[in-house]
Length: 431
Image (cartoon, rainbow, N blue to C red; front, side, top):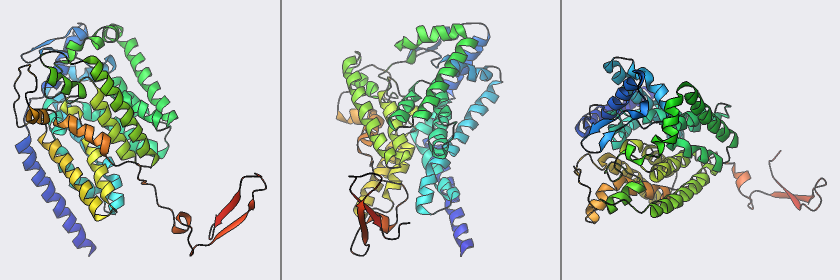
């Protein structure tokens, strides 16, 4: 019986992986590691003695493309400028695939426990689902490094924080020093009352930034005093691949700039709402939903959130599936439909099947508005509506949960240590 179950599971995983591979090949649009080539060229330019943030690569769509990461990221990526091009491509691509596998292992762990299935089985079924979504496809197509940052963040939140490790927070701190957007997870740690971990994260980010300033003072000066504030360096905000609130507003206003006060106001509302709901989830013991909401919120409020940054649909889908387990049939139906719809929209994406062109023009109608902003709108829906506050902590025994006629309660007098504190209630069977 055990052997037949193992064989059936192995066969199911094999079929899922093969089907996923063919689907991925059909959906994948090669971009020849375009972004990675820019990073490598900028590193070679810097290593040759030039100023890092003076590097500019001509681009037909956005004018010029630059190295936009902080100096600490430049230090970490410097070896890519020394390796042969093929070796650099292999390091980043294989590293990205490994990070997808590792983060999927962590994200599916609660599902495996809840469903009482082996973790390898949950991983095997989930990997095709994860690799097919547009954010992962574009990460691999462009040679982006965001999955390394996701791995650092999830290492903290799903591994080190639950263990009470004194190193918890280092991953988020490093991710913040490499790319500023993960800094919202430091705020997330604060609002969820993990103050020590938040301090470690903030200290790590500050320490890494200071280290970069010591090693590369000119690059640090240029970035923090100039490049960071030059919005033209990050590209056109109305480009379809920018799936942030600012991107949505930019596409409505193009060719003009969007109202900055409107954007800041909406970003503030989304930040407060997202962090509030994330905190509710964490208080109920649901870290998966909490980090999914925090990640989606970070993407929404950033000035530019490219599609490859939007990994956070993965834990959101896992959280919806996890919330299905044990619920009533109607609830399971709605949550299952929500998880499936989220995955299908994330697979279809915003620019895999439709070429929106390069013209700067306002969005002409509702159909284009929905299609070009699908991932922004999906993120907003999930931040607002994904279930939170339903405890995933181990259930207490019946005698601890209820006081009924079957479970007698002994009521004693007031505590001698705390006069006036009221009656002491002890459940039968309590030590």
